[in-house]
Image (cartoon, rainbow, N blue to C red; front, top):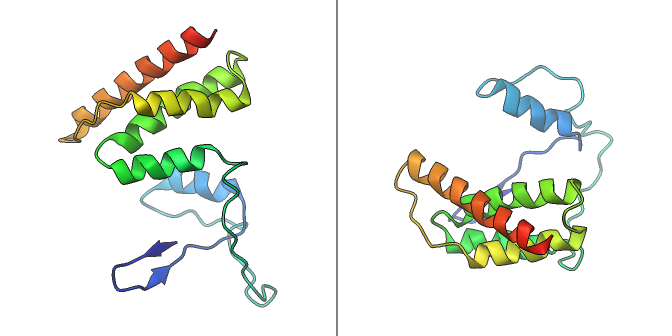
Amino acid sequence: MVTFTDGATIAQLSNPDMRLCMGYALAWPDRLDVPYGAIDWTALNRLDFELPDRGAFGCLDLAFAAGRAGRTAPAWLNAANEVAVAAFLDGAITWMGITELLTDALDAWPGDEATDVDAVLDVDCRAREVATALVTARS
């Protein structure tokens, strides 16, 4: 959902199926004709929204912090997250270690501006190096 400055909100809604997201990624900028994304609006009688459980989703606050910081913080956090998740899947850190590692990685963000694509790619590379060093330090 996106809320604009005039207060209007728009939403992209579909059935909860990751194949739709993958289809976006694979076909962009086109759309695939898929049988699993459409909602049957005659069967759907309400939408419920709840605040996220920040205790269960500890990295959510980090994502909000990166978004508020702006510049290259979201790219930095994303790169560090990819390293952290890979380390978790490899058994190098615990599930809760992902949040701890990302907190430390975001604290190490140098505050760079995104001047061009090369700058963002450089930030991505440096964030991965920092996150990898943090994984190594925990092993």
